[in-house]
Length: 90
Length: 383
Image (cartoon, each protein chain N blue to C red):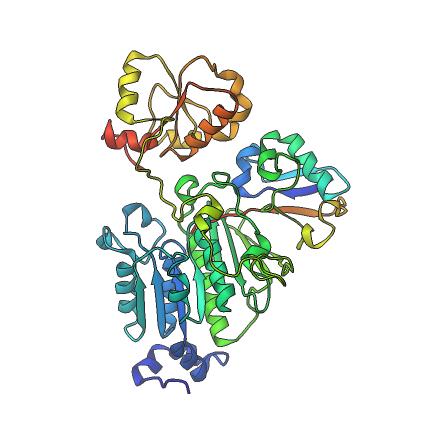
């Protein structure tokens, strides 16, 4: 069970929760678990064909999973996951 | 050959001259340098003030907005006395009052694919203080093509991000975000709001990074993304790597000249809300007033509950946009439904959601509650 940090723009879909505990041995499983808990999040993270949206960046600690093994990146209970949102305000 | 400092300048910058990392030579470097600030709003305000104070010799400002009173909660370079003026002129006057020894060049025009390279080519550092995705991608691509650092800052509610995208030495904005989010998925500050102090925090970080880059001191945010949360008062960093497949700075770039960024992002290159035309899916405030007198429709306000405390219509039921998808069973597709929000953007997305779920008798209140306050009930506040 790892902790997944939800960015502010997506908290409208997690009942205002800023952190969610997710099960799963890989980054992909953790995200699947997240959208199972909060189905309204799904279209924000995944395309209709189930692929992760290009602008969604999931970090394990300081590393982007794109620079690790992508959705296959192994996750342990001690890991802290964070979705980095694309925001444009200025 | 660096420019000399006058006796007045030596006194003005004495606290810089005392720091060994800056010193006389560093201050002369700042005097010889130039920075282009794209956007003179929330982020641009502190950036412009501090860079003017620091003695950057030439500062360019790009913006085509005018100062509005709803800007003043965070855009501290402007003032009540400059409401209605061009932002670039309001900002220039304040900067020259702070430091008459600098030069401020203003560009009262949108930053577009047509003018961006021409405007940016004569500056050492670009600062991204824009408020929308198209201009952020444009600023990034310009910085990559001109080989200049792009000091990035972005804000939303209590969250801020900052980095230095410098393709010569690290990743660019597209390495992190190859594509923008689909239109409507990420609310803008005009829709979602922003803590007024937040751009002060992020903007001063951008100004700090610009000064460091110009002086060649310290460790810039190249290859690092700073994530700030004002509520938690947390500063976190993540590592950013250059994407070899990046469309603009990768080994085989596919974008080699500026593109149509509004088409690429599917949204306009500004954070305004008004629209000129009324579509078949819209109902104007006076039409809604007329229809409500006959009471044959259901009015759904998709704003957050705390916004209804500012202004609302007694006939409206509140179903926040984020919960609408899970509450469709509460709506009857046989009944006529009008959706509303602050100014029509969120209710426009609610309309798309209902239409895609098979609803046909549904309309969006044009201009939202603010439009109603302008056209029907002028006693209601506008926010």
